[in-house]
Image (tube, rainbow, N blue to C red; front, side, top):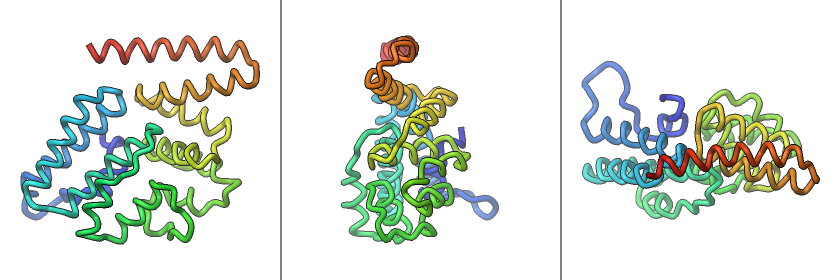
Length: 223
């Protein structure tokens, strides 16, 4: 489950090891945002948002502007990994009161404002994507080992109009391997659109079967 926190573990103030135990608000927020990501990626949106609001209540109840802003940054990153074009306005409003250079760099990365952005300010798993020339960014995804980071990078390339067929395939199989139903369904439908455009009836039929399976699972989970 820690793989789901590739973004959150870097952005939320870490609980750390050794020394005094972390305060309850910090450990509660870390646990709750992990649950948020898990259920959001599974397409269990009502439950996911409930956990997220509880995480916000934990940091907000401690009066922590910076940590609450980071939670919204995690929220934005998770939604963008699912190809939901979140404007991240909640983060921006909070960050204005407690600016942080690393958080601002990540916000710019998520919102596709890459011009002049220093890769060294990003979490390590995203740096090579930004360093790669535009025509090689799709290849840079192969070196990203964390599934959520890879899915996020692929989704940002889709949003920038830079994704190729291999990118869609990699994102689809990444979501499939993890059982992340929500982004998987989105990427399967993008691949089906490609199959339609190329007149590939065999691929279209195979994708239809996969889409049907995922939709049935999402429907069952919503009951």
